[in-house]
Image (cartoon, rainbow, N blue to C red):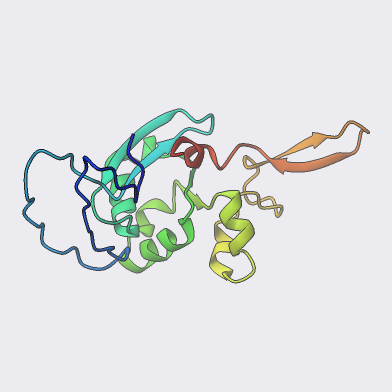
Length: 173
């Protein structure tokens, strides 16, 4: 198995330019030969809360918000099939892009974008949009399916997340 950045004697070292998420894609470079596998920036997955993969796609050069929105639209073309929640680590930036390009008008009736718990913990102080609209466990009653009541061993009740928001992140490791 080859790991990123690993240079094995039998593999030619390939220098690549890193492309920021929303920059225009550079024209496709002609390969030096056709005997090496193509490389992709990432594999994007849509998973059920239990971790089962519903859909996946490969992003060749970047994981931009517009590509994520296109992937969601292709996976869920009908309003009736759309999930109540889409959890993605960059939901706040996907939401911003969706608001900017007007696609949120189509999604806001059916779906709420939430960030994963790790992202929320690191982002909630600095980003008002993320904190207000992408919270994976809001305690204000706005998303009762995301929060459940649990009971500790000593009988004290507390609120907790209803499902593992890191399910798709764990799949990629």
